[in-house]
Image 1 (tube, rainbow, N blue to C red):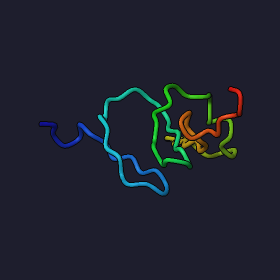
Image 2 (cartoon, rainbow, N blue to C red):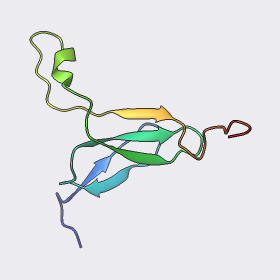
Image 3 (cartoon, rainbow, N blue to C red):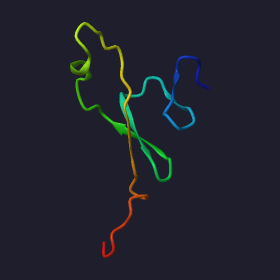
Length: 79
């Protein structure tokens, strides 16, 4: 059984809350607009601090990518 502080709640717009281990490596999410499944995307694209207005201090960020998963991408004929 996991104790308090060992799991974190992740809220992705349009979906139910997700729970994952609090000490999981930093990652982002991809939400399929076809089947509504959510996938973990490992890694981070870069330094978001460069986007913050002058004089502001960035403390955290969340990123959700939206599109269609491999199963939901329309298949081309002959492929």
